[in-house]
Picture (cartoon, rainbow, N blue to C red):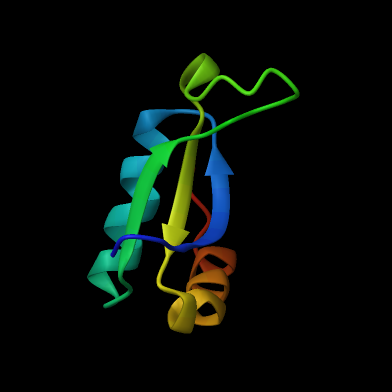
Length: 71
């Protein structure tokens, strides 16, 4: 998956790993990458990670993380 639809942004790599694992376990194509936060424009500041999913699976991914948010 080269380009994905933004699903969420999480504060740590650990949270990103949990979300990505949950999505993949449910058959949703996804990836995570360093997030740009604030007006600084520097990716990865503070460990923030962006979770992206396949465009056609965005709604299913949203429903899944609403049911089981990362802790």
